[in-house]
Length: 90
Length: 90
Image (cartoon, rainbow over all chains, first blue to last red; front, top):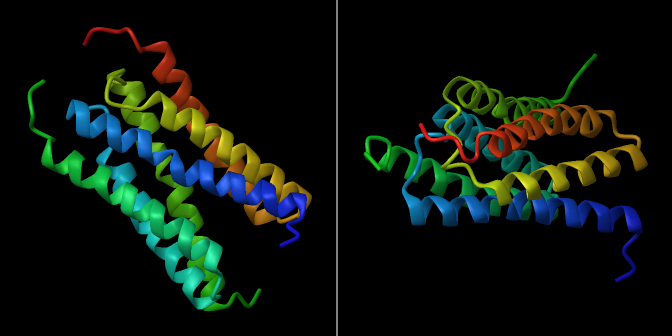
């Protein structure tokens, strides 16, 4: 598969922006420290990513579907933890 | 400008995912509470978004350049605040 440099840049960009939520999920699972995390951010983010998922499905663009599918799962976990530990005193 | 429904979905998705960082910036500026925010997440995120910006410039896709340009500014602010208030006791 001959991938152009540009597509490689896009692939690495997608892996980084998608993968970037993994350290946040791990940190939040370990510390339960959610007071500094914005609930509104993750609600808007999950809504936006869901729309990107729909966008990808309509256009049948596998890369957009896969990247946003994974990101949505990770962002939903952070959103769940934020709601779950919201009133937790550390 | 006759925009298809699909492009409208993409536009709203872009606005939401980009705009979602605004409440996090505001919350962090107000509370200085960064202990729960993952430094590694924002380093990876800023790197990934920079690559998306380069990807957009190579492909001359204005929507990708504008969306990622704004997101990068907002994510860099959160990254700066995370580093600035890292050792702050609340």
